[in-house]
Image (cartoon, rainbow, N blue to C red; front, side, top):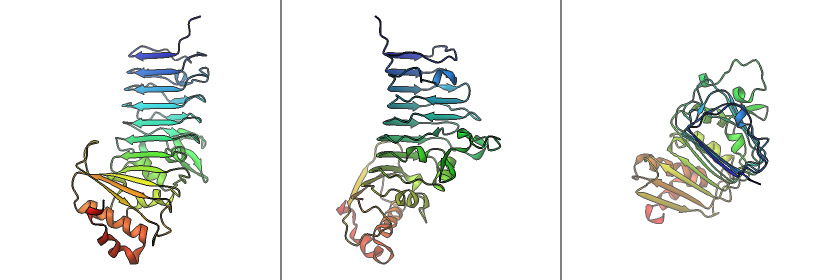
Length: 292
């Protein structure tokens, strides 16, 4: 008997029909137009790895699979005015990189270990159908959280290792932070400089206060690409620590091109947050760069 376990579809014209396979474990879509029915993988009970690269949304899409463990979506245009719901409750790893028109809505993923999310184009309220008459519509209103709705962060709240990268004024992250969930398992968090906006650092402050078991925070500040000329690590102790930050936080790593004024502002914010207002100046002076 012939058992097909891997499929790679590169620029192949696809009909909008569900895929049916008892043995398929991996599926790759590259450069194809996706429609809704072909993203229903309920008839593929062995599918664990799905990659969607440089594809286009032909219609509203619900990516649905209870068996999927690893999902990668890169360089895809999710479509202006189109809706995307990702329902993969047993997912272990997630990469969403380069959503050009609007972020998808993520369902609950309690088994999520590693997640990387990069939104590379500014979202705005006009990207979503706010006038939808059906108030339970996930794609218009997000996922229920404390009687409110979240698009991305609620689905990511079960992650153990999380990276969030965005452009300035990205609408969906700003909206979700107003309803910020608790990241109850999050141990390692990576953020870029768009989460570190002076003077109040509200986005950064919010997500830290909702990460009660965070152990390491990494910041990629004011640099282009993955390469950084300077990498600094501050090792934290429990002495004089403020209750505003996780008692488990052991290290803050900063990666940047130069140690300029903006980086100093971020450092001062952390000293203030960790040690409290009255100890901020003395502790900041002791955080000279030779200690990193």
